[in-house]
Length: 218
Picture 1 (cartoon, rainbow, N blue to C red):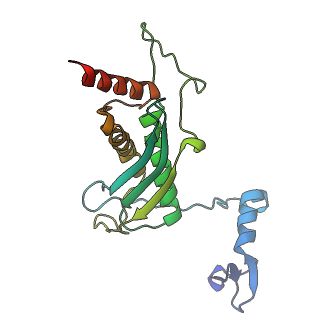
Picture 2 (cartoon, rainbow, N blue to C red):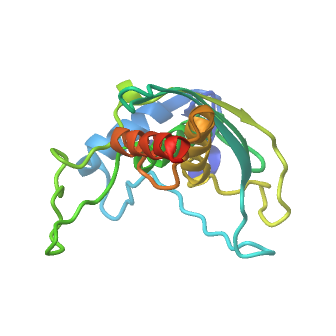
Picture 3 (cartoon, rainbow, N blue to C red):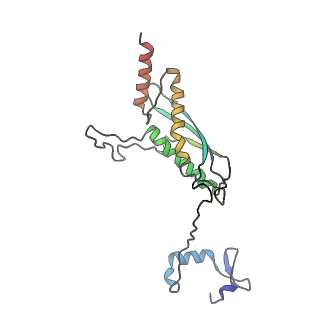
């Protein structure tokens, strides 16, 4: 820009000189750094990244707190479960990026519901994995997942500068337990109960059959 760096400043998304005239926009700087670094002088670092490192001042890591609930519909004739809705209330401290936090939690809930209803490694008598591909290993898909409603309570922690806590595993931890509680609540009138995941239709039917036999035993 043929100017003294000390005379330049950022203003309204552009680099301006001492007269207030815009010399180049930040958008153009980003375009050059990304697509035309060959036009920059030798020795210029064109990476548009900034790295900061932080060590907690108190406890080495912070736990989030939360609660989850699930609403399901169980077909006692087929054993199929339909997940109607799932709720999450999470406290991850001060929320910096609300959209990112919500979607992180939603992804975690799906990851938790997967092994609750679908995912299971199956082995034959020789110990060989028999469902080692996605053709046989079931994972949850969008059509099987419920609407996931999320709410927050913000309790900033004193162990981080921003008061934020980690939220990476928050959705996963309780999803399966909430789902199993919901399924068992639906099975309670029939005297059946599940204690193993995934809660497949076969296991649900087996639990119903066991409860039926127990009621009819003299």
